[in-house]
Image 1 (tube, rainbow, N blue to C red):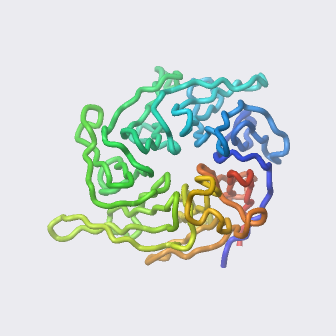
Image 2: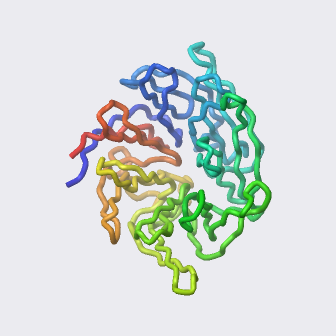
Image 3: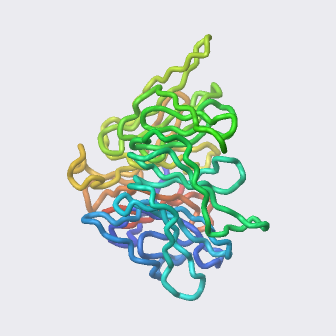
Length: 360
């Protein structure tokens, strides 16, 4: 039995990133995408934010990470882009109605997209941009004596080796706070993370990997397995981690969905309410604007349920452009209506959509 979803088209805007958070502190989740935030609970009223810079068929707006950066009680968000080469945050002005000010965090180079992970276990997200041609870096928000954000970030270069396309974080070894995964291997946390480079292990090649790469112990052996989509080609796979009696590590690739392309972003969330996470993902429509395998194929959004041995595919939406839909480069899931079920907000060059989760 599959979940039922009700699709609502919010706009035809071509922004590829969206988030869900309470912009106006009224207790209702709102939707934020590109130049606009949509006021909950009905998401009809629209408010301007700022104007992301266009570059051909793209907008330089490749993530939307909620974070109260300046500690004023209003949720801001972090973005960044490939073309502008900057990581930046957008300041929520509260109820003033003013345009959101843009603040550059760092001129770090082209960003595929950015993720927020709590790397040091202090309860606050670090910002981790995927820099295909740049080093592995993390940005920590400075906080005052009351643990509020100060608007300033501390940059840490974790390793100087170029990342490649794709980035993940999680308990690869099952020890400590977690490790980083990139397309050509993974990085082990040093004994003193604040002082030394992370240790690179060249153990696999994930190709044009998704952002994020999901790290989860699927087999129950205490080791992190990987779930990775091909962002600019065909394929969605999971990689099983094994250790032999001598402690030698190996990885075995298992296909999940080899017949669809441009799996650029993934969510690992409990979409069906059974207490276990499912994989939610779909196509990033026209990721390279006509230069990727499968770009003219039908669009789709799906969830995949782990069976204990593999993944079972369930269709949320599928069809040609105008009927099916994709999920952009950065999408979100949250309970928009207080039903106890996670709904999905999916942006993309095919517009911004809500998929209301109506249960079974």
